[in-house]
Picture 1 (cartoon, rainbow, N blue to C red):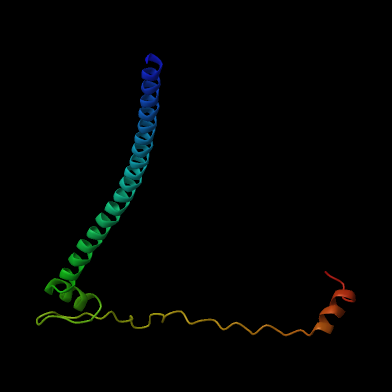
Picture 2: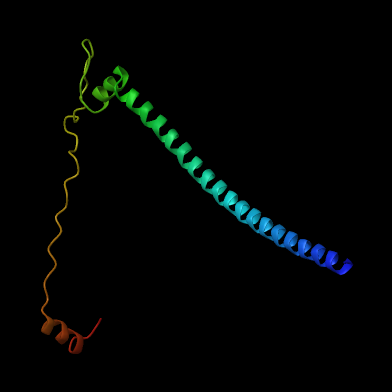
Length: 127
């Protein structure tokens, strides 16, 4: 009877150890999933933060471009416009002053045929 009780005890211990090993294995796989999901969450969170920052910058630019100040700035800088009462000043060339430098024409390079090039290599003396 004592041997039968010990066998049951050992059987229950083996089954318990197997169950514990399965639980530890399951726990490890869940922890690996948690680490993977945490990395993905951080990556997506960073992308979302960048997207929100970009959206804020674009909304700020949109608001500015629709403002009167932006229109006036464009009109003065690029549009060549003035408000009533403004006096436009156009720079003029001084009388007798030199005009903008005229481009110097460069002579077209002389085209040398292949036989002339070979002849020059073998016959002419370099100086």
